[in-house]
Image (cartoon, rainbow, N blue to C red; front, top):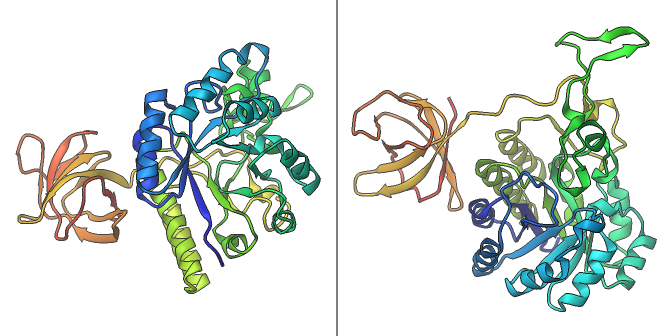
Length: 400
């Protein structure tokens, strides 16, 4: 096995730093223009420059998405924007239009041009064509099987990137028009309303077949989770493993990126496969709020790959806070509250340098220096005793 890039998403500068801190080799973000996920916070040019500097300081790379499918009116300012990204130190742009790819290739000799999964690349002939246009990397369609990935990658036509985790789409590689039809929000210009996750009444002529809350129909996919096929991916010849989720929380990024980082490192180090995969699966489950499956990698998805009638579970409230500061002489930590917790709870702390250590909370002081048994105000700074050393920005979650 050889080294491989772990590519993580980020919706803002803090999440970018979290992704890098937890082991991402590269981070992809969206700017204020030309990007899907328009409802994410996204980055202005100053933040893009700051993000590139932070990533480079830790030996990581920064990619920026220009992955909308542009209409005529969307192209104004494209060249100037790409030049600005080049000057900001961006390492690559991820594009979904061959015209945008051509412009990027002309505007910057330094930045790589990566072709988005939106192009639905599923065969070697397409990759040979893209290589002739100067494309530096191709993100394969999520609809590729493991055999497809291995067969294409071994040809070495152009470096290959594949998705390993996150949201899937009920349409081919995200090229959906449901949102356009239902809400006039163009999914391929950054406005997806996720209409597949809505709950629908089902009719046969004039008779409602499914109409009460318990039987309403939805058509969304389970999320992708590739931990079970990671050993094959690491030997497949792909250069990058990509996590989806630029709209996900900082806690989600820390948990999922950290789990995949450890899984990759453990497998490359020759540790027990079954144990390493199970450990990663258990950790990732703590951040999920939808069921997951292995996508198209192991087999053609059946009805078991979809969430008929349900589009997710309630968001977990295990994440209770982040460490603001820690005094090793007193074992007292300042913690910013995110969800409620109380004295007697078993808490677990994890971070880039701390691998999931637990303790039972015995003392708790609120922001008014009052001894309390419970805190619940989001963003309040409280004090608690942690019987081992922790670091700023470590995450705390509730176990029991």
